[in-house]
Structure formats: structure tokens, C-alpha cells
Length: 111
Image (cartoon, rainbow, N blue to C red):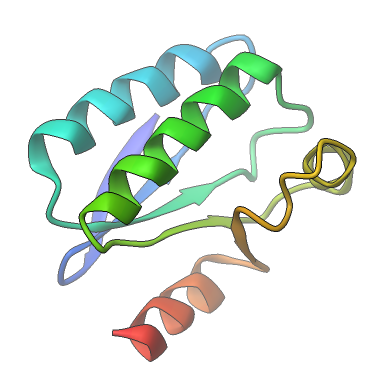
């Protein structure tokens, strides 16, 4: 997993492929729960499919960020993964962007 600061108060998380994604999302939740001062962009470019455990961790992250008034944007989400969100009825809970630049633009637009 890669974590980098990409703007003031914005971090980019690049997820590894399964099966490590669940552990990495759990780790990022722990980091954010102690930091709680930033927006988060998660890059899904290495992910083709996502498990329910990983979705659960994303929902926890989203909730933590929203409680502090921060955003979570998922970018470069593959079609099969996006379909999982849609079928589960979760696509309306998450904000999606085509790529990192679009996610950054969306965050700066709402700031």
C-alpha cells in the first residue's frame, strides 16, 4: 500500500491487489482514526474485485471521515468492482472519480 500526501489535508492511498486489500484497509482505518484531519482518495487501479470484508472497511472509513467533516473518494474503480457496489446498493454511498486528478479536483471544488 502506498500512502502519500497529495495536497493540503488530502492523502492518496493506493491499494494492493487481493488478498492484501482487506488488511490494508483495516490499517488505513487505524491511521485515519488517530489522525482525523484529512480527506482521503483511494486508488483502486490494482483492484479487479473486492470482498465484503473490504467493503465493510471502506464503510467504516467513510463513516469516520464524514463524522469529522471529511471526504472519501474512490478512483480508478474497475467495472466489475463498480458493479459490486451497484448490485449491493452501495454506489450511492460512495463518491467515485475517473482518476486521481478528477478526485483532487472534486475535493478542491467542495472545500
